Image 1 (tube, one colour):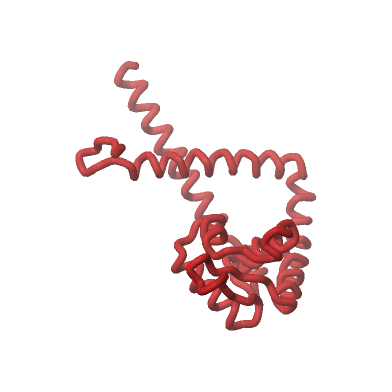
Image 2 (cartoon, one colour):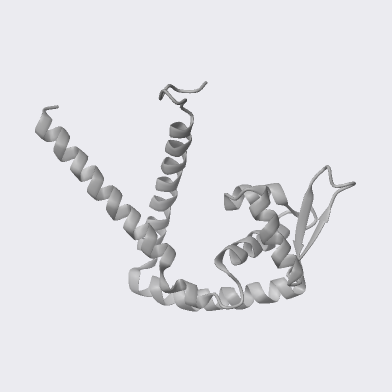
Length: 172
């Protein structure tokens, strides 16, 4: 590759990087926060995961283990504990443990938690229903598939970049 093409490619990558960063910023900053009055977005996501686990997991009797929740939300255990503590204090989840606690702590959603989750889901369904109607269901499905692929690539790239020593050599 000659010097001009290499420079042009770096400029294109810079523009794409900036555009992607800008759109992620807009999506995170977006007006959707207005639709979260009684729950924050992380609280909603946590309750949704807990409720979903209680529906599909007969083995664990509706339990969602803190470690699983942390992994799904890509949070540290400490961040997840703080989040669950807030939900527990509001009566939206019950937080318990197996045995003496060394085998893991888990949460289950309460009736109040389910009620608040359903209310929030209705608000989001109303909003996103209108968005999907305008944008198109097929477009939305394709966009979500592409975003999932992008997120996978971004995470694996981040892991690869973090797995180097101070000299830039891969850590094995």
